[in-house]
Length: 206
Ligand SMILES: Cn1cnc2c(N)nc[n+](C)c21
Image (tube, rainbow, N blue to C red; front, side, top):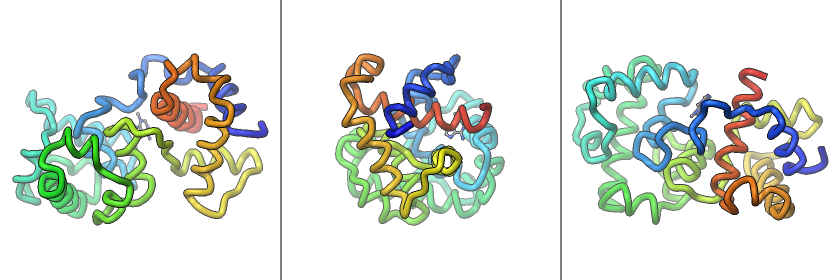
């Protein structure tokens, strides 16, 4: 393929998101996505689901205002399956408190947070920031990760940086938007959310 739109059209033929949510990431648009984006660092997604369900199994939703009040040891115990749980607990509590301090509530955070603000938070790099922007805040931005890197390498593409690879994906879609817009309700965020999900599912299950 010569651009990312050709890659998307190839992946679309494989029905990779069967039985998956519309935007691929579970509970998009909620604070749970912020939790999952940090928890998935350096572990498998199955472990993230176990950690998230430790709280949800007691009919509780993950709420920003609540996590901000947690003791690190209390949250660490809940998220243990995700690994690095003491560090992740500390960072999630600090992030929650900074969101309340700078945005007041989750809705305002969703509307107004920037990539720069996220990257300034301890424990948030490009992949985590873009996961939060795309799947929690519905921004027109595509997530790059080890799966996207490996897929492109397999096809002979190498990039100097995270943002170079991101630029290749986003430019290829935007320059050919008329070819795929109809499949994604003319919504670029929906396209990027599903495109990234297809790549992850393809690289995990082939
Ligand atoms: C939502 N999400 C984030 N990372 C994932 C992964 N590696 N595998 C599967 N899923 C569903 C994931």
